[in-house]
Length: 89
Image (cartoon, rainbow, N blue to C red):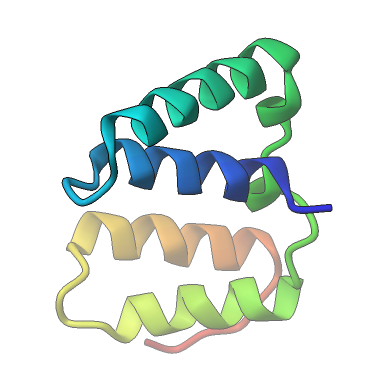
C-alpha cells in the first residue's frame, strides 16, 4: 500500500494543477480531508528511519556549502560536536 504522506502529496498536487478537472480536484480535496481526519498523516517519515551516517554526511556538506548561512553552519558544527564527530571545515 502507498504511504499516506505520498498519497496526500499527490492530492495536493492535483488540487493545484490547472490541468486537472474540477471534479478530480473535489475528489482530491475529499480524500485529503479523509486522510487528515483519520490521523494517517500524523506519522512523520522525515523524523525516523534516517541513516545516521547519511545525516552526518549531509551536515558536513552543508558546512562546506558557500550558500548556507554562517549561523546555520555554526549550529551544524555544534550538532556534529555533540555527536562526537571530528570535523575540520
